[in-house]
Length: 200
Image (cartoon, rainbow, N blue to C red; front, side, top):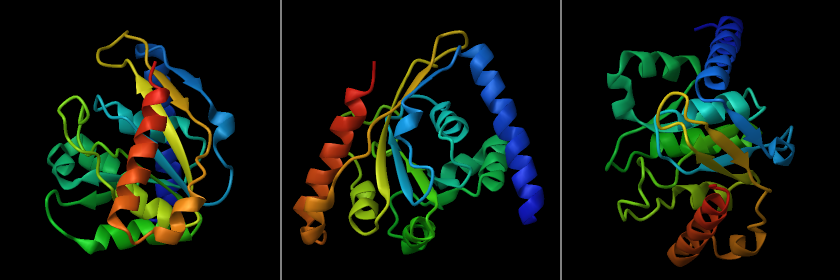
């Protein structure tokens, strides 16, 4: 898709999703003043419904956000189309593919944004799944700002959805040990704690 055409298409689709969420889910947005207007940003949210990625996409006030998502999503034709429109970074589950990691790092180093869910799957925490440390890798190896995002509601139509953007996290003290596996786990847990503190 051409660059200008893609931007126009993004604007149209983003506007349509925003209006839909406002009407159907009575969407409430909080904390957007915490989002940097420029520079790389890592949006990290909790994940409970299929609505979560579009919610972040249409409310984060940045039009240069790329989601990291599992490749299986492309089996759904609508989600596959959205993936192309919004330039999603696709990851093969349970495979050590460095391509998506490099793509995400490049995106952040170009002062753009990525969005991901450390739980790795819907309701990961409830299922007892350990959060993925990929988010810590991106946070520790770039100058991007980490913004925790808490999402509640939206499980069914006309149930109110609330999305809350938290304050930027200061993770500078951990960067000196960024190659340490234990550091990655500590940072991941800190990020998850910040996310869950925003869930109402």
